[in-house]
Amino acid sequence: MTDILTKLAALTRKDTCQLLPCPSCSAKCDTLSAHGFGNYSVKCFNCELQTQQHQGQDAAIAAWNTRLLEKALIALVQEAAGEIERLQAALRAVHGRCTPEMELVVAQALNPTEAV
Image (cartoon, rainbow, N blue to C red; front, side, top):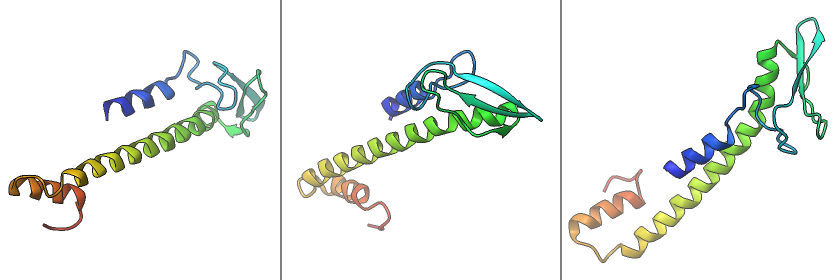
C-alpha cells in the first residue's frame, strides 16, 4: 500500500505556482489568466489546453488540478484491484493446505462479507 500512496503523492505534487502539470503534455506551471468580473482560467502555453472560465482563482486552479488527480486515483484504484486479485489467487493456492486455524483466516480473507 505504501507504493501506491507514494505514487499518488508524486502524481499530485504541485510545484511553486500551485498548478499541477498539464494533463495533456505534462508541461510545468501553466498560466492563470484573468478574464474580468472575477473570472479566471488556466491555460497551458505549450499545447494550449485550457479550462473553462471559473469564478475566482481558487476555482480555476481546482478545476485544472482535479482532472489529473482523478486520472491518478483511477489508475491507482485499478492497480490496487489488480493487487487484491493477485493476493486472492495466492490465498486460493494455499486454501486446503493449512492448519485449521489458518484455514479460518484464509476463508475469511477470501470471503470477507460472509461469516465463517
